[in-house]
Structure formats: C-alpha cells, structure tokens
Amino acid sequence: MTIRTATHLSIRNLDVWYGGQHALKDINADIPRHQITTIVGPSGCGKTTLLKSLNRLSELNTQVNVSGQVLLDGIDIYDPAVDVTEVRTRIGLLAQKPCPLPMSIYDNIAYGPRIHGQKNGKMDDVVRTHLQDVELWDEVKHRLKAPATGLSVGQQQRLCLARALAVRPEVLLCDESTSALDPISARAVERLLDRLKENYTVVMVTHDLAQARRLADYVLFIWLGEVVEQGPARHVFNQPREPRTRAYLAGEIG
Amino acid sequence: MNIVQPRILTDRIGTARTTFVIPRNRQGWRYWKDAIASQGMGISTFAACLLIVVIAGALLDRAWPILSVESPKALVTSETWHPIKGQFGFWPFIASSLYVTLIAMALAVPAALFSAMYLAEYTRLRGLIKPLVDLLASIPSVVYGLWGVLFVVPLVRDHIGPASNDTLGQIIPFFATNNPTGYGLLAAGFVLAIMVFPFVMSVTEEVFHSVPQEMREASLALGATHWETTKAVVLRKSLPGVIAAVVLGFSRAFGETLAVLMVVGNVVQVPGSLFDAAYPLPALIANNYGEMMSIPLYDSALMTAALMLLIVVLTFNIGARLVLVRLNPETAA
Ligand SMILES: Nc1ncnc2c1ncn2[C@@H]1O[C@H](COP(=O)(O)OP(=O)(O)OP(=O)(O)O)[C@@H](O)[C@H]1O
Ligand SMILES: [Mg+2]
Image 1 (cartoon, rainbow over the protein chains, first blue to last red):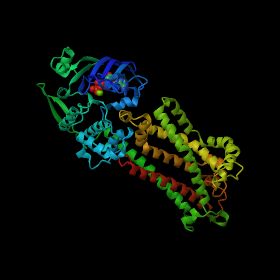
Image 2 (image 1 turned 30 degrees about the horizontal axis):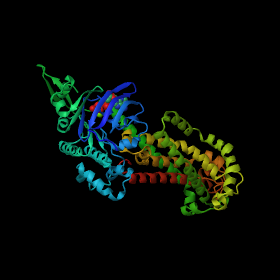
Image 3 (image 1 turned 45 degrees about the vertical axis):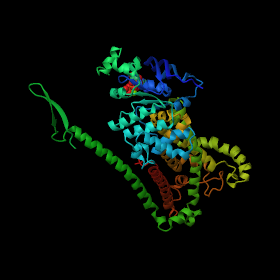
Image 4 (image 1 turned 90 degrees about the vertical axis):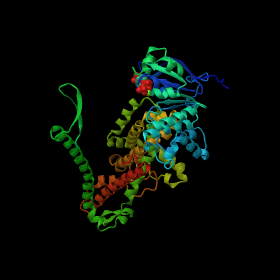
C-alpha cells in the first residue's frame, strides 16, 4: 500500500549525459498528482530528454547516462530491483513523432491491453471507447483493419494517444502531442487531457504557450538543461520571478 | 516542368520586392546531365530485364528438339534416364534438387533468423560479428565443397547415418540408410545450409536493423517486454524483407552446383532416404555438358534441365512477390 501524497512523481538530482554532453543538470521537481504539468522551454533545452528519463526510455540509447532518482509514489524507478516494463506500464509516454506500430488501426489500440493480459472478448469495446475519447472513431470506424501507417500525421497522433491510454497508465507523458493537429482536433485533445486529469497525472511538453496557459496547473521552465523556474501555473505565467522566464514568455528567446 | 524561382530584386531606392523569374529554356550542361542520368539508368534497367528474356529464349530454342517430341509432363514425371535409348525422364534430378534444397533451407533458415535477431536486437557486438558473417558469405563454393568432402561426408558416414538408422530409421524408412559412403542428400543439404546461412542471415539482419528505433520505443513505452517488441514489432515490420531473403536464399541453394556435386554422390535415382545419393539438376548439366554430345537429343535434354532450373527459380520469385503484395499492399511494388 503506497501512501497517496500530493506529489505523484518526484525528481531528485537528475543528471543526464549524451556521451560527453551534459543534457540535463541537477533537475529537482515534484510533479503533482492528478494535475497537468507542462514543461516549456526553447528547442533543444532537454524537454524530450527529461520526459524519456521519467519512464526509463532514455536508457535504450547506449550513449545515455542517467544519475539521480525519479520516485513514483516514493519508489525509485531506477532501482535495480524495479521491473522496467512495470515502470513503463504505469508511466506511459507519447512520443514527439507519432509512430504507429506495423499493424492495423484496431491492433494498434489492442496491442497494449493484450500484452497486459486482457482477453479478446471485450476488446472491441476497449478499442471503440479509446478511439472515441480521442475523437478519431468517426474517421476510422470503417477501416479498423487497415494499416495504421495509412493515417495522416494528425490522425496518427490521436491514435498514439488512444493507444497509450488503452494501457491505463497512472502517469501520461505527452511530448508535443498536438503539434500536428489542426486547431479543432488540438482543442479536442486538450479537452480530453483536461478530463483525464481526474484519473491521471499528465506531464506535457508544449511549444504552444497559449495552450500551456489554457491547460497547465503546474509549470517547469527549462533552459539549457536546467530548471530555471517552476511553480503553479498562475505564478509562473503571471508573475515570473526569473528574467529568463519573462523573456521566454514575451517571445524574446526560444 | 519549369521551376519558378522567386528572386529578391532590389530597386534603386533599395526596397526589396519579389518577382518570379521563369527560366527561358532548359538548356545547359545541368539539364544534359539530368537527361543522361535518367535515360542511362532506364536503359541499364531495361537491358537487365531483357537479359532474362534473351537467356530463356536461347535455352528454349536449344531445348526445342526434345520438347517437340516429348510432352513436358512426361519429361518432368518420368523416372527413366537412358539417353542412349532416347529415354529422358527428369524426375530423379528434379526430386534430388528439391530434396537437397529443402533440407538446406530447413536447416539454414531457422538458424539464420534466430542469429540475425540476436545480432540486431540483443547484442552490441554487431560491428564485430557482422563483417565475419559477410566474410563467410563470400567464401568460394569450391572451398565449402572441399570442406564437405573432408568433414561432412565422414561425419554423415560414421556418425549421423548409423545413429539415425538405429533410432528413427527403425520406424520411418526415410531416416534409414543403406548407403555406406556418406555422399548423399544429407551431406549436400548440410553443406548447402552452411553456404546459405550467412547469406540469409546477413540480409535478414539488415532488414531487422533498418526497423526504426522509434517503433521499438513505441512498443516498449506501452510496457511491452524486449521479446514482445521483437516479435510483434521488429519481426512483423520485417516480414516482407525476411520472405525476400528466404527466396533469395532458396534461389541460390537451388542453383548451387559445385559444392553440391562434390558431396551428393551423383547417382541417378529418386532418393528414398535422407542418406541416399542423388543427382540434382545443376550437377547433371555441369557433369555432362560437352560429353557424349553425339547422342541424339542429349544436348537438347541438358538445355531442358537448364530451362527447368530457370523456370523453378523464376516461379518461386514471382510467387514470393505475390505473397508480398498480399501481405502489405503499401510496401510491395
Ligand atoms: N540521441 C541523442 N544523442 C545525442 N544528443 C542528443 C540526443 N538526443 C538529444 N540530444 C541533445 O540533447 C539536448 C536536448 O535534446 P532534447 O531532444 O531533449 O530537446 P527538446 O527540448 O526536446 O527540443 P525540441 O523542443 O526541439 O524537441 C540537445 O542539445 C540535443 O542535441
Ligand atoms: Mg523534444
């Protein structure tokens, strides 16, 4: 029985290197439970690197070195005793570039539930509800058996979101998940994320400051691999303490 | 198609304005190079395709004397090979070829797939091992043949043959042996498997390796294990390429001549056992072309054998292409 505190995911002294390059420097942050945390910062500052270190995807790259702790309800996911597939099941990640698996639209959604032991009996329902959640159902309901690679990039992005949700993670890491969407679909995904926070903790990277303002409860501003400022969204957006945050929000850097 | 290029012109006052300048014509060395490149590539591709037609035509022409007196069905199914009496039954040769190739593929393909998967997905020693495998693939076939004579034939004769005869052979006649030499189907299939293995492995490994890393990450991010990811994502994505590699391996094995004829025994018979000597089509041609050519229709019969080789390999390749098209309408051309 884990103790449910306000902090769901807590990052302690996290450093990440790509070979000799120090990509993340001593990151400390507490990600609040059942809220939307947005990570903002200029391109190349380490946002994707941070997300990938939160569910141990970064360790697939042999060049990468990670030190520090990421505590999920107090348990360090980098602890050697921890099962990495369990970590990734509980902390889902939605990649920056949508990547459908080489199978049908239906099987893309069913893939996760199947490996986690869901029987095929209820699968039709699982697939339908998740596609409806991301407002993709009407577009694909007639071609569920078609290869997912035939979808447009925006549709793929929504498919990947549905696929990640079908595993029912506790934490959902979204890397610019609306970047390829038209304003209407983007708003649909935003509404979905907003609804999701009742049951999920969401960490999202975005370049769209207006979107961050609309959605964020908590904000991390990263600059050259360091967290420059973090706090409740109201404070960071309305009264930023750091000059660099102010400059970024004003569109002067980034 | 003319390319419309925007150019920034600056007028006297210095304000920039954009106009579109359409190139007057497509002359000049650049365009010549473009034309030469596309025409040149087209011509070489076309010539390569034409080559198959030319070869098949020449073979058909020389095979015609026998094809015009015997029905193709009789040639393929008849078992009696008596050139002097004018009896040309190809079934022993066809059966030998099929047996040897199937044995080789059965041994080589699973091994090649597993080691390719290991190399692409499970080890960081790829840079070390891959060149070695490619080196194996480039050893001349006569070397494999010699190695077969020195090592594989005695192994089959002294160990595998007797062991199989005393166990499985007691129940299934196919595994019994009454050939004490060791030269035969199994020796040939084994040598051929060793030859095809590095080839199939190298190609499949390349296919596995080219699966984008993001796709593996997408699967792992859903909590899949390494093996689940390999099976459901890497293998699935690579399936067309794997089939292509197997077909290439089959074609090579089916047509391989020298190494096989050194260890297969070269006895005209329909093999009834794994250890029987056999006589595959390529060996028939290589051993006999240029000799006894005064026998009527003999030359024509050997040409028919070559034509059969060509037809089998072509059919197999086209068949595989059809499978690929059905498998994935997007990637198969
Ligand atoms: N696989 C890699 N190998 C080496 N360096 C990398 C690798 N991936 C990222 N980097 C480097 O790490 C730094 C942070 O990259 P990251 O992808 O995390 O940036 P980002 O904030 O997500 O940028 P963007 O907004 O453009 O997506 C960059 O300087 C980048 O060049
Ligand atoms: Mg990024």
